[in-house]
Image (cartoon, rainbow, N blue to C red; front, side, top):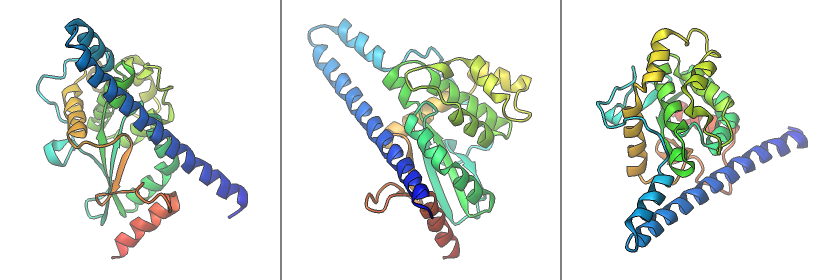
Length: 259
C-alpha cells in the first residue's frame, strides 16, 4: 500500500473519530441545557417550557398513535430493519440518524464493505433508526427521513434508499429532510421506489410512531450517540490503539464465519 493511500485511510478514520466526539459534545451540551432549564423552572415555569421546546425539535407529526411496523422489521418489538442472511455468523448492529454527520462519515467509509459482506452471506446487519439531531438542532428531518426509509422498507428497497439518504445528507444545521417532497425527490434515485403507495406513506407519516418507538429504545439503552456500531454485541470503536478500518472489519467478520 502506498504512503498516499495509508494517509487517506488514516484521515478518513480521524474524521470519523472527530465527528463522533463532536456529536458527544453536542449531546452533553443538550443534557446540560435541559438540567439547567429544570433549575430555572423554580423561578419561572414559562422559561422551562420554552427551553425544553427549543431542544425537543419542532416536528408536528403525531407519534402517539398505533404503531405501523414496516414490512419485514424484526427483533425485539420489531424495531430492527435487517439486511443479509439469518445464517450469517456475524451480526452488525447499527444505530443511526439520517441527519448525523458522524453517521455519514461511517457510511461513506464502510458502506461498500458492509454491503459486500452482507451480499456474500458473511454478515447480518441490524439497522436501528434514531432522531437525535431533531432534538439537538430542532426540526423534523431525522423523523421524516426515518419514516421515508421505513416506507422504502415496505417496498423492499430500504438498503438502496438508506444509502441515497446518507450520500445526499444536508448540513446538520439545515432541516432539508424535514421536507417530504425532498425525500420523495431523492427516492427517484432508487429504481422503482417512487410509486403512489410510497408517496402516500411518506406524506402521511405512516411509520412516525414506529420511529418514535425506535428512538425511545435508543434513549432507554443509554447509548452515547450515533453512530453506535456493535459487532456481535461489542463496540467496533472500542480499541483506540487499533482503530477500525474496512479491512479490519472484513477480517473480524471473516474470522467469525470460519469459526
